[in-house]
Image 1 (cartoon, helix red, strand yellow):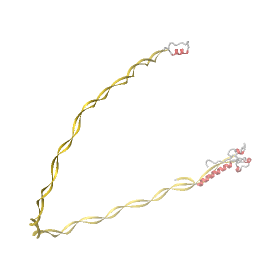
Image 2 (image 1 turned 120 degrees about the vertical axis):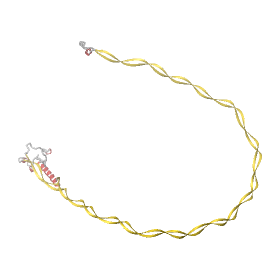
Image 3 (image 1 turned 90 degrees about the horizontal axis):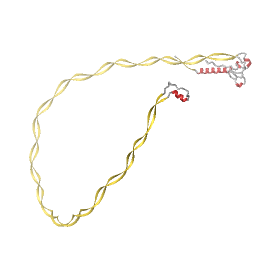
Image 4 (image 1 turned 90 degrees about the vertical axis):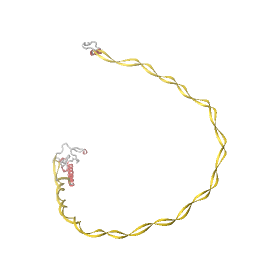
Amino acid sequence: MRVPMTRMTSTCGLAACLVLATAGEGMALGHHKCRHAVASASCGACGGSAPASGPAYTTHEETTYREVAETVYDQVPTTQMQARYRTEYRTEQVPVTRTVSEQVPVTRNQTRYRTEYRTEQVPVTRNVAEQVPVTRNQTRYRTEYKPQAYTVNRPVSETIQVPKTVTDMVPTTETVNQPRYSTVLKPVTKTIEVDQAYTVNRPMTTTRQVVETITVPAAGAQAAAASGQSGVAVSPQRAPETRQVVRNVSETHEVATTAYRKVPVETVSYVPEQKVEYVPAQVTRMVARQRTEMVPTTTTRFVAETATRQVAMMVAEQVPVTVMTTQMRQVTDLTTRQVPFSVPEPFTTTVMTTQSRQITELTTRQVPFTLTEQVPVTVMTTVPRQVTRQVPTTRTVVTPTASAAAPYGGAPYGGAPGAASAPSPQS
């Protein structure tokens, strides 16, 4: 694969030099006798113009080839070795140890015990209760009566005269003025305005539409009458036209209308009014009167006197008393009883015992392992290379003929006024 890239810096510089050289040659060949670079005519600054019979020129193109170095980048397939990893499995024998339990008969010597009974005399202690007389001193209480003097308050009644104030209520009659209330209806006159209806005749104008039928003469006759040409005869074939005209007719007539006006009216209303008048009346009142009188009153007073009475008192004394008391004593007796005891007997028995043993077996299993292998891989690599190619440059050269060179006499390089060299668009 070929990819064209940018040209080298030297190539760009060579092309620029070619363009400048070509432009310089064009300037050298395109001068007039005034030595100004004008392509077609003399400039105004020279103050002269070319003669009418100008020199003859010959135009020809020159093509030159130059080598241009370019850097081209190519995509080149390159084979590289890459490491790839692959997982594979291999079969191998692995020893596996497992525990196996087995029932194994085992003979063991065991001892069992047999219970037997033997008779023996055993002392037994028991408690015996006995009634024993015991003399004890007991405290007894005896009641005795002793005279005792004490003070007694004896009530004594006496009658005495005590002054007493008595209030009597005495009726008294007197004349007083008492108010008497009465309600009187008092007439009150008020003037109010009342709406009074009355009839008024008011003129009212109404408009109604009336349809009338009119006869309109023919159009020719109207035109002749309008122009004033009496000598023009109206054609008898045109009959007058009949039209309906609507016109408004106004009529005025009186209409009775009800109107209202305010009329003062006097009304009499009765308002209740409370009236108070005082009337003499006989009033009996109870008047309190106090008086003092002597009232016999019996009073009781207490007189202290000394009296004697018999008071019972408890007297304690110690008295010996014989009391039967229960006492416990221990009595030991011999008792016959059966006492159990164990007799050992050896015997042989076979029991099944679980025993474990290790068994090693070979087991097949898959073991993974990684293999590394080199695999050729083709990748595209960019490779730069230098390419040299021929670049054509075309330029146009204008050369004056031999006869035209003498009159001007001074054109170095054989140039003449108006001669120009322009690089070709292909350069």
